[in-house]
Image (tube, rainbow, N blue to C red; front, side, top):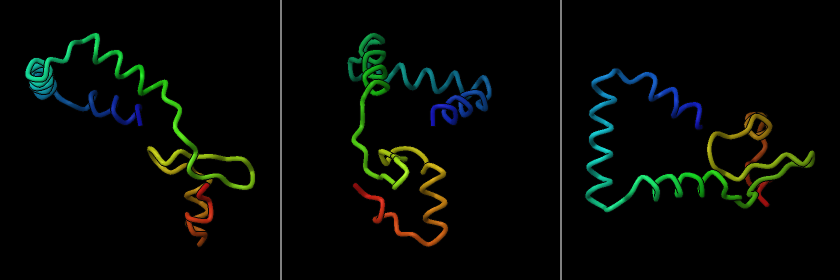
Length: 87
Protein backbone atom coordinates (compact mmCIF):
# COMPACT_ATOMS: atom_id res chain seq x y z
CA UNK A 1 0.00 0.00 0.00
CA UNK A 2 2.84 2.37 0.82
CA UNK A 3 4.34 1.65 -2.60
CA UNK A 4 1.03 2.59 -4.21
CA UNK A 5 0.87 5.87 -2.26
CA UNK A 6 4.45 6.67 -3.23
CA UNK A 7 3.67 5.93 -6.86
CA UNK A 8 0.65 8.23 -6.73
CA UNK A 9 2.89 11.08 -5.57
CA UNK A 10 5.33 10.39 -8.36
CA UNK A 11 2.50 10.44 -10.90
CA UNK A 12 1.34 13.92 -9.88
CA UNK A 13 2.60 16.72 -12.06
CA UNK A 14 4.46 19.56 -10.35
CA UNK A 15 1.47 21.92 -10.22
CA UNK A 16 -0.91 19.32 -8.80
CA UNK A 17 1.65 18.27 -6.21
CA UNK A 18 2.21 21.87 -5.10
CA UNK A 19 -1.54 22.50 -4.82
CA UNK A 20 -1.89 19.35 -2.74
CA UNK A 21 0.92 20.47 -0.41
CA UNK A 22 -0.72 23.88 0.02
CA UNK A 23 -4.06 22.22 0.80
CA UNK A 24 -2.47 19.91 3.37
CA UNK A 25 -0.62 22.78 5.05
CA UNK A 26 -3.83 24.81 5.27
CA UNK A 27 -5.67 21.90 6.90
CA UNK A 28 -2.78 21.42 9.33
CA UNK A 29 -2.96 25.12 10.27
CA UNK A 30 -6.74 24.98 10.50
CA UNK A 31 -6.68 22.06 12.94
CA UNK A 32 -3.50 23.03 14.77
CA UNK A 33 -1.50 20.01 13.62
CA UNK A 34 2.26 20.38 13.85
CA UNK A 35 4.80 18.55 11.71
CA UNK A 36 6.03 16.82 14.86
CA UNK A 37 2.53 15.59 15.73
CA UNK A 38 2.04 14.38 12.17
CA UNK A 39 5.37 12.53 12.21
CA UNK A 40 4.51 10.92 15.57
CA UNK A 41 1.13 9.80 14.26
CA UNK A 42 2.65 8.31 11.12
CA UNK A 43 5.27 6.48 13.17
CA UNK A 44 2.64 5.18 15.61
CA UNK A 45 0.56 3.85 12.71
CA UNK A 46 3.60 2.17 11.18
CA UNK A 47 4.50 0.52 14.50
CA UNK A 48 0.96 -0.51 15.41
CA UNK A 49 0.48 -4.24 15.67
CA UNK A 50 -2.91 -5.13 14.38
CA UNK A 51 -4.85 -8.16 15.49
CA UNK A 52 -4.79 -11.10 13.09
CA UNK A 53 -8.23 -11.56 11.54
CA UNK A 54 -7.56 -14.35 9.05
CA UNK A 55 -5.35 -17.44 9.28
CA UNK A 56 -4.90 -20.56 7.18
CA UNK A 57 -3.67 -24.03 8.12
CA UNK A 58 -0.14 -23.17 6.97
CA UNK A 59 0.21 -20.27 9.41
CA UNK A 60 -0.34 -17.49 6.87
CA UNK A 61 -2.08 -14.52 8.46
CA UNK A 62 -3.70 -11.25 7.44
CA UNK A 63 -4.94 -8.39 9.61
CA UNK A 64 -7.64 -7.36 7.13
CA UNK A 65 -5.95 -4.10 6.09
CA UNK A 66 -4.56 -3.40 2.67
CA UNK A 67 -4.76 -5.75 -0.30
CA UNK A 68 -5.71 -9.37 0.26
CA UNK A 69 -2.61 -11.54 0.42
CA UNK A 70 -2.10 -14.01 -2.43
CA UNK A 71 -2.80 -17.06 -0.29
CA UNK A 72 -6.24 -15.74 0.67
CA UNK A 73 -7.10 -14.42 -2.78
CA UNK A 74 -6.28 -17.82 -4.32
CA UNK A 75 -8.42 -19.64 -1.76
CA UNK A 76 -11.39 -17.33 -2.38
CA UNK A 77 -10.97 -17.63 -6.14
CA UNK A 78 -10.99 -21.42 -5.72
CA UNK A 79 -14.39 -21.17 -4.03
CA UNK A 80 -13.52 -21.10 -0.33
CA UNK A 81 -15.44 -18.64 1.84
CA UNK A 82 -13.36 -15.91 3.46
CA UNK A 83 -15.24 -16.63 6.70
CA UNK A 84 -13.54 -20.04 6.78
CA UNK A 85 -10.26 -18.24 7.55
CA UNK A 86 -11.61 -15.78 10.11
CA UNK A 87 -10.00 -16.10 13.55
